[in-house]
Image (cartoon, rainbow over all chains, first blue to last red):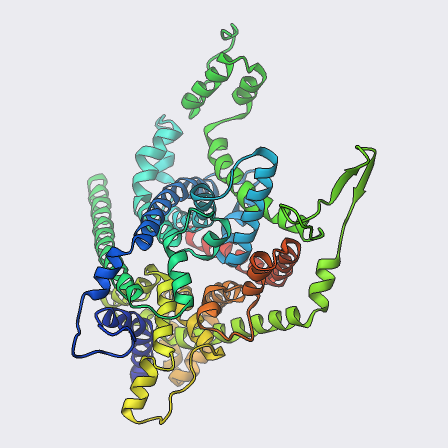
Length: 282
Length: 335
């Protein structure tokens, strides 16, 4: 086995380089003075020119604000619906419509985005004809569409967290006369909080990043940030996008590192508490 | 209206809050509704019903509408398709127009057939490349120390959290004729003239592999991590070379992880829209782009719907396989 260590490590190093070089090159060239983007202008670089231009660009800032709003609403809605679905699928045993619910929560995970986008747009058009709602398309339709595909991811995260615990704690509380709603809020919810946090962040990212579905279900006054980036990127590279990417990478990297540390801590504390509870009881 | 006497306040577990709804319905004179709520609703039912109804309304019904419109005829109106059923002559005659023309059009037109074939090819090649790059990585992570393991996993997941769109866009800057790769190769002296990298099949493969690699690595890692290493030790004791032990033990055991990873890459890759739009050829589009062009540029909603249905039928088998895998995974986690 030792002799193949170099191959394994080489593959890992190659893969990680492949994953990170494009991101690092964006960061690097965001400080480049030249409009040619990929040609380093050594005389006048590094510069914050493109960052200044970025923050003077009202279109991008408005779009970013709109995307933030939609992503926050999506994440919250997806966590609520995904938690309910995950709870039903893992804890409720057999019920009528269970297979259907299970299918409906896994299919969006792999569904090509163009199909989801097209079908939701046709639904909104048909609904508008029948009921007058939604009148035109905009923030509401984008949010509904995002919740629908993001909740599938939250459901998976919540499901696997719930499946990791046996339900003996919940059973015990029920036996002692606690009402199911109380059991959920006092026992289940604290246990699955890490899953809810990562589910919320995941849904937020998915919504924040989506361009295809948004293009289908957006209206004239609801251009999200990815839509702006996509239309700019289609025309070629532009340095202010590099600056934007750098800021986003910085935020995400900090967030992921912090939340990983936080979750590790939570997990360690939980294990410790479990151990103490066991030694007390024993 | 006052509550009718003799109505018991619903006893039971999660019915506290439902009791409020029930009282409200009574207050507004909706007797039958309140009776229904009292008899049939419980907290548990509500927990099931909310996500169920949401997904049914916003995931299943839309597909039924797409299916319906795929049989319509295009019409110069808003919305631009003819209804399947229509009352003519002031409601005296019901006319149905079930039109298979859109499917006949797609299946007889070379453009659509070659686009479908090209999309399947691109997805298959990218999936294979993903597997070839991802398997050794997942293997290396699964066999490293616990501390290194969580660090590597974080490094794999981190790009996934940064914008997919921006990461694809980053490749435009790398692959351009005057891009980073060409400039570097020219400076080193490996090539004399810049290579055409952007807007080629290769660029699309790179883009898909790059974006979907974490989806391949994570299920593979989850599988490889669970393997019982004593099996390999036993094989070594019995004289098997490491490579043979890998082929006979590790590889067969990791088939579920391989299948899951491949499906997670292949299915979305077939309908991929952003990557081929930014990196791909202009003379050979992928099916996601065709669908979007039919819809937005040609305003032919029925043909766009028919393209979606055909694409869905082509992906039905892989999607069902994926569903099965998800179910098995969850059952395994429960035990």
